[in-house]
Length: 113
Image (spheres, rainbow, N blue to C red):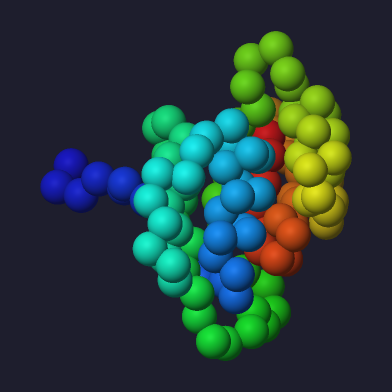
């Protein structure tokens, strides 16, 4: 493969606050804080949070899917994330796959399966 994904970047109004939430949610750490751009490192994923002036409008065009850790299970992870401040948007299932759609505190959607 000629390209490798190294980071997912999220536009937001308050990068430090959102990065801190995701660092806890992913059991990672703030790796770099450049003021308007903050990077969270949680192996094997890095997420960047960059300040933008525009407000979020409508549904995300791209979102991240996370697999629940072994032993915790999807329900346990969803419960933990809701306890941290995420909100459940919906639950879905197709043969062989069940997932929950959530929103982080800034309203960005992501899935846990």
